[in-house]
Amino acid sequence: EAQVTQNPRYLITVTGKKLTVTCSQNMNHEYMSWYRQDPGLGLRQIYYSMNVEVTDKGDVPEGYKVSRKEKRNFPLILESPSPNQTSLYFCASSFASGAYEQYFGPGTRLTVT
Amino acid sequence: AQKVTQAQTEISVVEKEDVTLDCVYETRDTTYYLFWYKQPPSGELVFLIRRNSFDEQNEISGRYSWNFQKSTSSFNFTITASQVVDSAVYFCALSEAGGYNQGGKLIFGQGTELSVKP
Image (cartoon, rainbow over all chains, first blue to last red; front, side):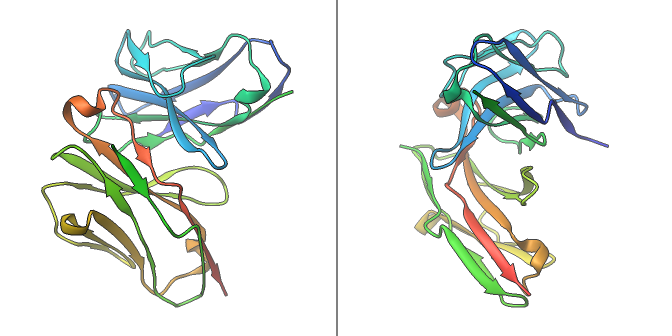
């Protein structure tokens, strides 16, 4: 089954404790992206990747890092999480950027206390 | 500036009613793509449809239909004979081609929460 998977689905952590949210797709997509969804602010792009080893900042990159060492994986790293990073996070992938629909993972609900 | 507006924050209907969700967009680009996504209570984002700016044909898929009108910059979504399972938040999104959108990002509207009551 073609899909985007994310882990964990739910995470409660404390300020400053490094964490990684994994994202993997099995569709051989070149493009991958991370979004966060917040009430009143909607969905905003954090980082994106056009292909392996090619990543760049989206609209709200502060406090996040990403890497793309393999085509299928695009982890999101929070080196020192803060309460304002409490959010619902989505990973997405598509055949290429812009013209193609993005397929989203199930979401990771992160709470930072 | 690029922007997507979904003016209807919440809509409530009774099962079997038809309902139209409005979407108005703004873009600088002549080539762009429009999408609809569904977010059911379980939280995932489900892709429904993609339209490119050169194709103004309306589309029908079962009980779903989409009306794209460049003249009014609108891409409205109609559900015919609504069902309880249609209850969800629906997002309209825009992606610009070319240099305006190096990041390939989707610009989402704020979403319309549809509640279908039995």
